[in-house]
Amino acid sequence: MTTATTTATTTPPRTYPSLRAAWMPLAALCLAFFVEMVDNTLLTIALPTIGRDLGSGTTALQWVTGVYSLTFGGLLLTAGSMADRLGRRRVLLVGLVAFGVISALVVTVESGGELIALRAALGLCAAAMAPITNSLVFRLFDDEALRMRAMTLMIVVGMSGFILGPVLGGTALAHVSWEWLLVVNAPIALIAFLGVRLGVPADRPEDLTRDRLDLPGAVLSIATIGLACYALTSGVEHGWASAATLVTVLGAVLAGVAFVRHERRTPSPMLDLRLFSSGTVRGAAIAQLGTSIAMSSVMFGLILHFQYAYGWSPVRAGLANLPLIATMVLATPVSEWLARRFGHRVACLVGAALMGGALAGLAWGVGHGYAAVAACMVVLTVGLRTVMTICAVALVDAMPSNRTSIGAALNDTAQEVGTSIGTAVVGTLIAVLVTTRLPPGAWSDDLVASFFHGERVIYAVLAVVVGLVAAGGALTLTDSRSTDEHP
Image (cartoon, rainbow, N blue to C red; front, side, top):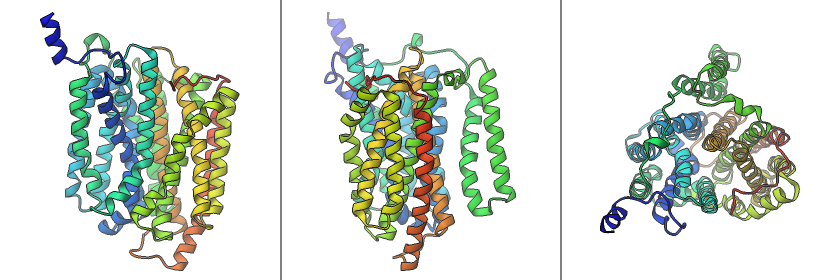
């Protein structure tokens, strides 16, 4: 009895009987997930300040935010594969340490290029954390209901972090320099590290796989996404018919073809393409792509809108995003009711229509004051929450029982790729339609008018693109009325 008691005090239990009993590891995993998600959007509020301090134009600023999502999304599947082989807790702990150290190095940054490189490294570290935090939650509990409650908590915390980024960043900028928005990651990562180390049980050899890591697949996937996004920037900087742009586009196509061929032939693929034979898997991933394009493009565009066109302070611009945050939480019963009443396909189509309509409304609302913009933000978020929730449930439900972790990683990857695309598209269109260099100080009336015109074109285009992408994905879903993701 004494031996058993001693062991229990030094070794974390393999499972916990309740959420309260698992407070330390669950809080640590939520904290790790929160910090990696908040970093997606934390710097958006500081973009004007960063642009002035480092002398960066709109092209560089879109990469400050976009490169994080690019490396994050491109490496999610690779990180999940590494965790299955090397140990999930081990990879998460290494990722937390690297995330904290690299964040602290922001104090040495002196140029836009250096900041972009640092953000790329942070995205890589975040990729080593995101899918693993979700999979480790399942290991904390044997009871399925407890697992679902814990996963719901993780999703709410993660999405809150994504949306709260500008609010937290704007509030902090009123008191400290923008570098501290990243420096604060270091102590947060340390706290999460201690909670995971002390509360999450170590990996067992029998829980790991001995399959070979698909390094060629990882390289090809990153090359495909990276070159495709860079092609947008190259078109602005060098011209759409320039050799640099055409070579970049060709490289993206060739890398994509090579990735598909390799994944079909290798015995241990990073992403088993046969999973996409399921219309539900394919459609849910496509629809999730549409939600992230909508969210990232609106957040990137409106931050510039509030601070430049309206001349608001970072704090006020951050608080202007509160309709997104409140609606993301309050819209949960709406999305659940739609799924139960009409099934996944129809409910997701309703969400797609709301997103498309809200973006079309923004094309009009940006020139008619904040009230019109806020109303469109509310409608957009209801659509986002509906499609995101339903597609997350549908994607995992459609996976074989032994591939649910891959389903979660695929869901995260689709969202991060969409975030990268949305940021790149808006940044590129602003550079084309408005200006490639953000001027210091207040904008002239002519530049503000030009910006409003650019926004109207951008949101009108996005309304069509997002509506078609999300609706196209929704059409292949089933009439399932499952909402098992929620307790």
